[in-house]
Length: 334
Image (tube, rainbow, N blue to C red; front, side):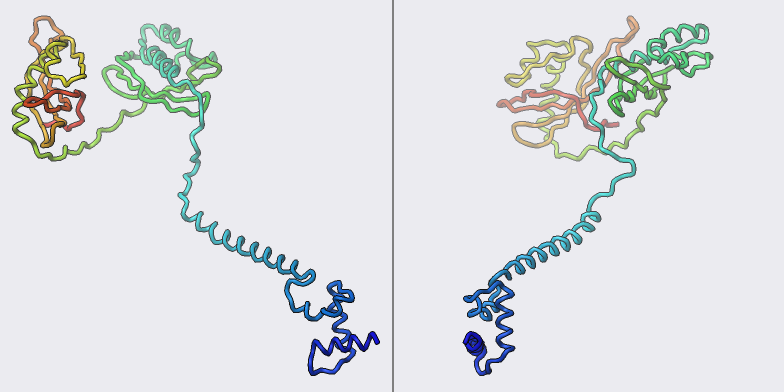
């Protein structure tokens, strides 16, 4: 009876077919394959057509994970070469500058003091130079640091032009120096450790910066009426500026502005040029002034030197007040 009931159930799943052993075996396989019981036998073939029945949902989860993995691989495979082509090419040997606490200020002062000993020598007294160099050099270093003992040299002046920090212990301090009346640059290797310093190696002479090609100043539409007015008004201003006359300066300065002046080091010689562009109540003017500078030789006539200033001026009714005075970047005329 059990076999007949099974056959009949098989007939219901496949109308129009006669029950057979194959049908029964097929139903048994389908239900048993998914852990079917008596209830599973009755619905085995119907459930086999539903994607979520039994354990088959694990298959679909696996397929989703597989497809997600394939998509990630494909996307990364396409993106990687694109990023390589679009990123800037690294220069050979280039690396990020090392972060360092190298004492640049102290090293600069140290290099300046060293230069005073290094760039002064006289063949008449070579021992004096060696004595002055000794505090800066390691004991194993040539105490004349490359000088052959002949000739003479005089350092006229020196100032720091730059510091190239190589790492936490080493830097090259570049000095702008005048030696025997000639300007040049001197690269000084400075070593530091634990607050102590030494000149690690031989310095190197370097060229001074080459002369740049300066572009002409851009053309402006000038306000000739204001220029004429300022040539007269600014005479008193520059006279007071040369002498540091506070009361005289206050007459020309905008409210809240103060200016020290030159303390009598020069005397007013005249205004050579005033350029004021058209505009509103606040303008930026360029003024070239001639200063009389006392000669270094007593009773010799004073020389004159033309200098250019940038002035910010503001209108105060019928006059113009000086709000700011500073050096100019305008191109010098002929």
